[in-house]
Length: 202
Length: 202
DNA sequence: CTGGATCCCTCACGATACTG
DNA sequence: CAGTATCGTGAGGGATCCAG
Image (cartoon, rainbow over all chains, first blue to last red; front, side, top):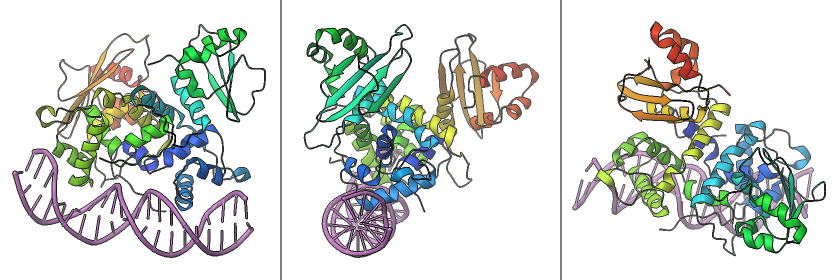
């Protein structure tokens, strides 16, 4: 498989050689959330075309970004591919800080994209020792985030224990934190405030 | 100016919309080191073609990545563009950790690329309070790095004070730290060891 | 029905020549 | 020096078809 190269002895250029083709980083993003089948990826990447998706997945496997074995027909990141999480979060953080996040109605949207991006804003604070489990429900989709002073862990589907706070909307509803808290039952508001405090603006 | 869009309501995708076209991130990389003129960028980006470079620079200016005023015929990053340093360093760090950095002789190479990439490996250590200034000379090119427990600062040309250590080779010669130190005069070796200790492997 | 492969058209890219 | 104009090539994108 021949791949375009910038032909530069530079670490940044080497990363661009492996990651810079169209769609590659978005495939990484989706696989950072969970392993996915071909058709799931296709749905999440509107406009890619099955030929190009197939080609990209082959290239990414050849480059070592994906595991060789396709467990259960799911594509899974290799250790090298999973090592891209800081890079992807760095992209999300820059974007959230500098780029207008205008949600257009005809754009595609999958809620777990926000679950990953929120991790980019997570700011550890060793003084906060109590873990908080937040559940998000949005249009049939369910996901959760558990934070404590040093870690951010997220997952899809129902959480394993009763959540401390139940946000009845997409992750992006946290953006206006006041309204996000006001809609909650009294006994969840403290946990909600505390949860939101892990994601300072700017 | 029309630009391709992924059409996704996702912060990572928004970043890809602005940064994902060919050459864009490499232009950012070069401008993170210093403002550059058109012809300087062209030299550093072998194979780009003047038409495409011109188009990219226009797009990047329209996107807000570059300053509108072209001071002294030099292209300069805007605040938004300079905000990409963590992202670019994140790419370098991943690349240095996971991708074979095989230097091919027909590849282009500019020493300041390494000066920037080295910053990706910088590990602060508040216990190291003494600043160390290292000078690199390579094939007519001169650059420097000054580190202390919390900061990494680099520049092109001669440093402003007498350096603590003088590495007579490219930055990449640090990779085999033993030989990098052995070739130095006795009185510089301690500073060299200390400097290198700021960049732990893995 | 999933997981692709094949065909074909378009446009982005890349090389070169030319201009203010 | 700093681009613009032109043009050939190949990557991207959409539709359709095929195998398990």
